[in-house]
Length: 337
Image (tube, rainbow, N blue to C red):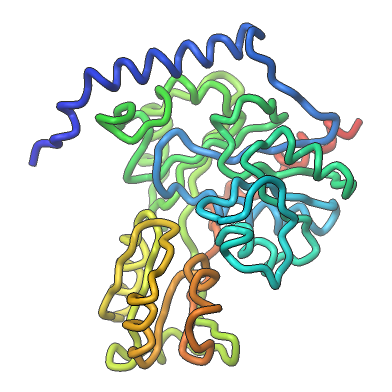
């Protein structure tokens, strides 16, 4: 079926012109970008929608926290608080946002903060003496010049196949990828072949010095509630329903399907704020399986003994994990010298 959004292509040309001029003004130094003396790593994308930024931030927290004091800074999308907020594990989603709260609960030793103004947010974070700062969803936030950029693009939605808003989902043209140090193709099938990887590399046309990596979503073998952990095979469709408020639930549905788990599905938009009516409806269900991000939104509104989430992690394909880790380590060591 033809995409009706392509009729909006003339407006995309206008949007492209505005973003291109903005980038050129930053590149030329007409608009100022502030850099910092400590290692700052920005994770982001060119496309709107889910490319796996949160799992990548969590992966970076995992590999960096053992040797470094790490801080993360997010916008805190759809939170009700304003300005800089230091996130605590006991905070609500309304104050902290769902993903920052998830980071803090999984990595309590990390300094987690939210601020829509990344420049001011980093300045506030410096009082906590972090050794590395991770910027979540900051590829287009050019008021801050990160020392290292990780650009994510989903396997089924490569930025080179998309159009600029509003005809497509690109926040800026694919030419913006030139700012990336690393490009990661996310949500790949686990059996992705070397030939397919090379085909995608040729399609992305990385610049000299840019590395391209491929990752898949690795699902846990257990679902978790506040009171217990259950093996996946214990999920019964007669007892559980699935609730998602993420950009693209298809990979999760495909995975559950591969495990012969077919659940009634309540699907909501990304970062959905659940209404009282929706919560009342969910209270009538026996047990609820959801994503970790949605668990943060629901845990204060539903009985915890009936609410479960399925953890996920980043899994590198083709033995490239060590190379990726080494690039991050080299950047941090070089910046600290």
